[in-house]
Amino acid sequence: MKPKDIEVLKQIAEYEDTASAQDLQLGWSRQDVRIWSATLNRMVVNGLPDTAFKSNSYTGYRLTDKARAILMGGESPPLVEEEPPRFPGALRGRVPGHPRRPW
Image (tube, rainbow, N blue to C red; front, top):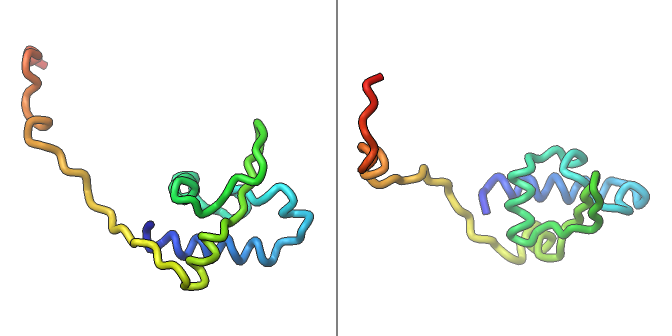
């Protein structure tokens, strides 16, 4: 979990707490809470939001108890810092068996 994800969880929890029950009947979408789909996907993989409703045109989410526990400070998720990808030297050199092009 990235440090930015905690801020996103707070933003989602605030939206869930302030929205009306009718607005949250199907759950919230990523457009409602204004987060990137990659961030939402990473959080779904970690089990923080749960899919409340799914159709061809809409997916509704709700925060799980695990996410609420993280926000309350009861559970501290491991924070992961991003590292740039490392490639072995063989990937940067000439491809074996591939002729060198004159252009």
